[in-house]
Length: 368
Image 1 (cartoon, helix red, strand yellow):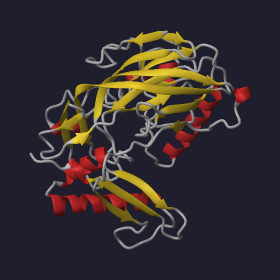
Image 2 (spheres, helix red, strand yellow; image 1 turned 45 degrees about the vertical axis):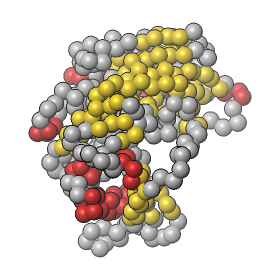
Image 3 (cartoon, one colour; image 1 turned 180 degrees about the horizontal axis):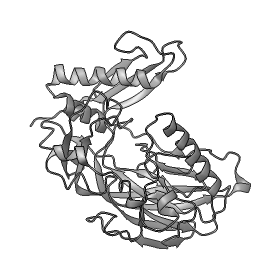
């Protein structure tokens, strides 16, 4: 059996929230139901709720209202799913729309403190490749995936997540808390207390793992009866790290098959989502350039095994190289790193300096 869920992806979730939601809540009503083994065909808005595509002038990014972003399609009940089970979501196909966008938002991203001017890229997708007038001479091969795959949290998990995020906010951390005005559906207490869909949690959510492509299986621990599956945030392509804060954000239609691994049959149950996938084989050698970074700040100070700092230094090295050797602006380099370069931990044991690499495939550069 196949269940089809439609959304008006050309309109914001604020204007049309049928089959959609944008908050995390344990008791949100299902918009449909399927059995294990069934397929779900879901229309998905892009993760920015169409806002980037609606903007022509990058200056408008400074006043962007992100309250509605990360709209999800669902939730869908999986009959027979119970807490303790593991839900398996296998992606069958992802059909992206023809237009997409990437943006540098001032103050956001791994180098948000260094990029204080907005920069907007509109992509045209054809033949499995994305090209943009704002990124001349560059073509990004598509490898679409679902950035967001989630089940509902239990009431206990919801409260624990809310408490720890409130504590982080009290310490000055960047946490987007509940916001009723842009919550959809606009029902209480969901609107006032539902958590934002932006961060990943134990129930899944905004994972942004590029390996969640067609053929992969996302394993999600079930927390409530029916599991309550939601999908969203499709990406046409993304580097590992999504360093500027956005990928090639695109609306899409996704087909997934859902199955269950029962609690009584499990030898291991994940605390956080896990993914089963096959590493793609590239035909022939693929030239790459790789920078490295260690946890030493620009002022020469060191931070013990700080892999975030090491990642920043590797990324800054790549942006510097792209500017000096390839003639890109720093904003273009930052975007290219976000959609095509991979941050990876090379080692986390050589005290006091862990090492992170930033790898860019050089076949992104093509003739104009």
